[in-house]
Image (cartoon, rainbow, N blue to C red; front, side):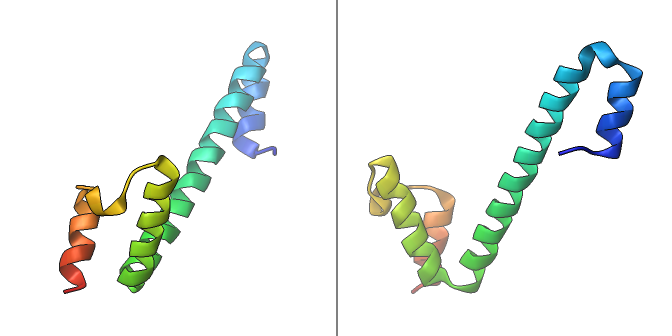
Length: 82
């Protein structure tokens, strides 16, 4: 899990090596989450019915009902399926 920029930052400030590594890990995790979100939104745009089931699954995991959700995505899915 090394990167040229990470190694360069560690060489410049060796006392902050742990901080640099943690920031690098956080950045990589945020990048991974953004790729997952992008994949989710691309699939939702391609197939509104599939997106609806994904929203219902997410609502179920939160312990709420997807039909009671008032988020803009939910309203968009209801309007586009009519």
